[in-house]
Image (cartoon, rainbow, N blue to C red; front, top):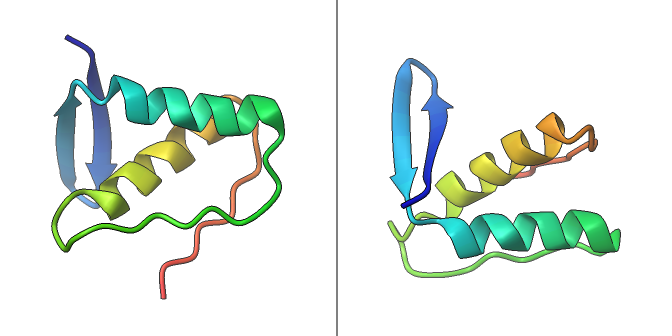
Length: 70
C-alpha cells in the first residue's frame, strides 16, 4: 500500500493508495504535456489535495509548475 505525505500549512496529511493518480502526474510530465489540465469532481473529493501533491512531485523531479486556484 503506497503512502504519500503532503503538508498543508502546519498540517501533514498522509494519502494511501493514490498510485494511479500519482502515475498520471508522471505520465503528464514525461509526455511533455503543455496544454492546461482541468481537474473536476464533486466538492470534497480531493481535487485540491491531488493537485498540491502533483506540484510537489513535479518540483522534486525538477519541473517548473504553475498552480492556479481561483
